[in-house]
Amino acid sequence: MEKLLPVIANNAKLSHAQLAAMIGAQEADVAAQIEKWEKEGVIKGYKALIDWDKTDRNYVSARIEINVIPKGDMGFEEIAYTISQFPEVETCYLMSGGYDLALTISGKTFKDVALFVAHKLAPLEPVQSTSTHFVLKKYKERGILMVENAKDEREVTTL
Image (cartoon, rainbow, N blue to C red):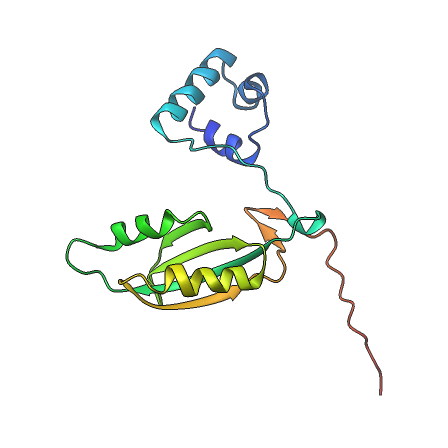
């Protein structure tokens, strides 16, 4: 069953029968293992990867780097949990390197994202600084190419 999780992570739409055939297991065993992982919280959910640029939905994404100062009973875990509760926050990671937490957030406009940072995130006591980076175009997400054939459309001139 060790091969099962990577297959599900790659394509969650496969049926139990398809999964069983792919890993050489019995369908009932696959179904039981998936149910067990769902109950244990190993499998947290199933989501489709949407190319929002091909829809009519206005959607802005940003990556926010945050430096925080843990104090007293509010360490990194508690700070990250508090920030993760905001509905705008899609991902929240503890990082090593130049900043402590990395967020991915979304909003309808650039202004919505900026207001989230200014009115909800920056005022939190542990937050020392933020750096916001807006996503302009996605080329690859979760291992899936988001562009068909990236063609260089720059004009070339000769002397």
